[in-house]
Length: 351
Image (cartoon, rainbow, N blue to C red):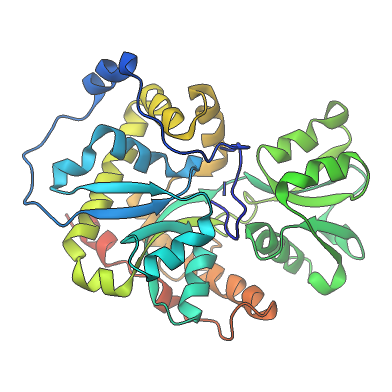
């Protein structure tokens, strides 16, 4: 899911308008889905209901499956997914208690914490794994060739973070390029028209560009696969909600993992469910799942711990924080530890 008013379109993310509102499951497939659904367990004690803010994005598949199959009921929990047209509206909705929690990009959490809102990541949801990319004319051979070049990207978005990180790997910064602020959707036309030679965008726009001229005119120079973990969607709650409703948040995570397990056991049925929610075909769902990664519980715990991997929040937090501060979006970079809370994942792993 991409913030600041830009949403991954038909990759549906991080579609052209794939981020559409949920539609009801077709009656014709209801019996088939029910037959494949996990057996119902004895209901746990009833908990307070929660509303989770989301946008339409392929990485949120386990939530859509849990919603369609009623998997949260197995944990005594009622969860409602509230779809937002603009992901930038979700953090304020969390802060104002309009929703109890929401799925946002990690940079949004950092921005909120820097402004004193005290929101925390309780679970990574998905990582862009090639879905975001820097595409260039075939004559551009490497990131080192970016120096002095005009590069189009959407400022203060995951595209900005990916470009900044790629430049840093070659000892470069935004001062070494000519920046052109442009929406991801506009980049294919600009590149085909020859107005720019390098652009940062995401699927399906990456493929639209690289398929030009029989695949010989443009190519991917650097992608989120090369900086895996840098672009990440997370489930976040206000610290007050975490303190008041630990049992409910744990149940939200349990239902999510039930949905993720169902996706891995029943990929065809899951593609139908996710496609219904997103307004795309099951075939499109399967294709888009290849450019994101929903981590396992153990991967989540590893990524919330300190390491040198870009998948670690301890690494991505200062990268994102420095960009936001340099662009005047925040006055200080919040410590990594203030932006995450792994107590629920640890509790689930201990079972």
